[in-house]
Length: 123
Image 1 (cartoon, rainbow, N blue to C red):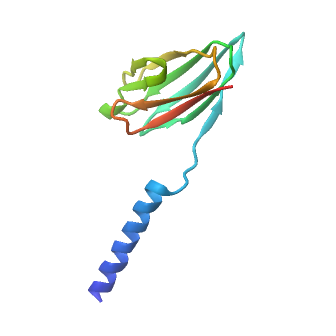
Image 2: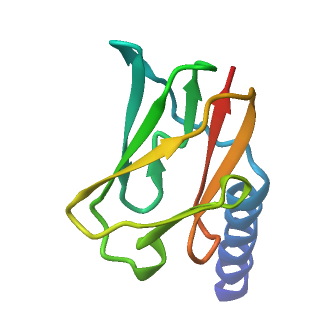
Image 3: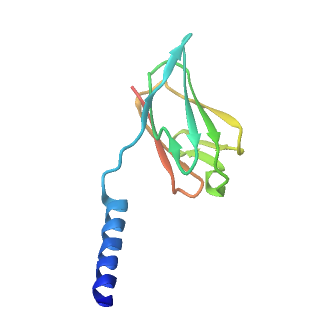
């Protein structure tokens, strides 16, 4: 009986790991608010980025406002490799990151350990 319980527990663990890494997960997406020819999105940083995907309008100056609510050291920076941005995110404080919207495209961001990711889409 103990062997059956161990086998079922092991199979359930393998199924969970497969789902975690290969399953479809919903991604929170947010369209920027445009006000007085500027656009911005507030992003909470707590065990990841919320929203994880941001849509911006091309040609309108944009700012992403990151508020770090997590003390994990890997979330202390946000890095946009394609845009040359490496911004420190002090805990409990809002840090604004200006995004170049002169060209359409997709720009990924990640934490300093490349564990958490997000994406900006400029259309």
